[in-house]
Amino acid sequence: MSTRTPAVLFVCVKNGGKSQMAAALMRHHAGDTVEVHSAGTRPATAINAQSAEAIAEVGADMSSAVPQPVTDELLRSVDRVIVLGEQAVIDPVEGMAATVTTWHTDEPFQRGIKGMERMRLVRDDIDAHVQALLEDLREPQS
Image 1 (cartoon, rainbow, N blue to C red):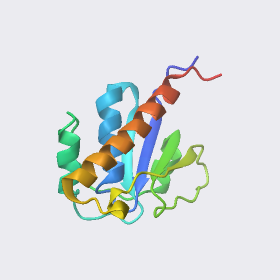
Image 2 (cartoon, rainbow, N blue to C red):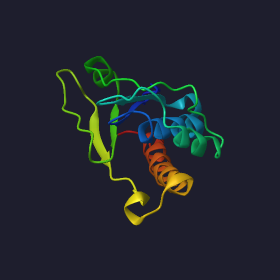
Image 3 (cartoon, rainbow, N blue to C red):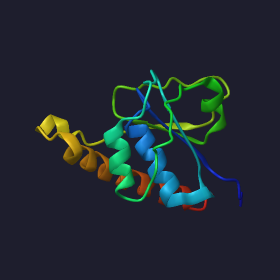
Image 4 (cartoon, rainbow, N blue to C red):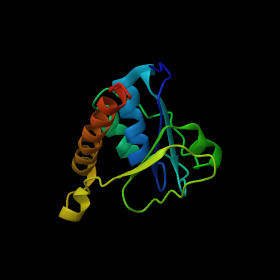
């Protein structure tokens, strides 16, 4: 059995909110048992402050995160690519072995829920996905 640390890349468009939240939550739950990366298809210039605040409320931290672009090298270096939402699209690159999965995350804004209430719902939905992924990564691979 391989003892190699699995590597996961979380992707959204701006890499300022959802993908950073997922990365922070994975680091919070997995510690150093998972190599965590986060990037955007069109990175913003800063982290979403409400996202960072919602993450801090559950004891995780993304306050020092900086939006990063998706690169071919990054795509080749990970085992899983997780796309959060329908807007970001990842096309496989040569030499890439990772599977690409899209998480259709909750969007409370569509129900008229805004501000921190919205962000907490988004966080909790992403957290449930992250914990399920972590369980999957911990399963012995046959």
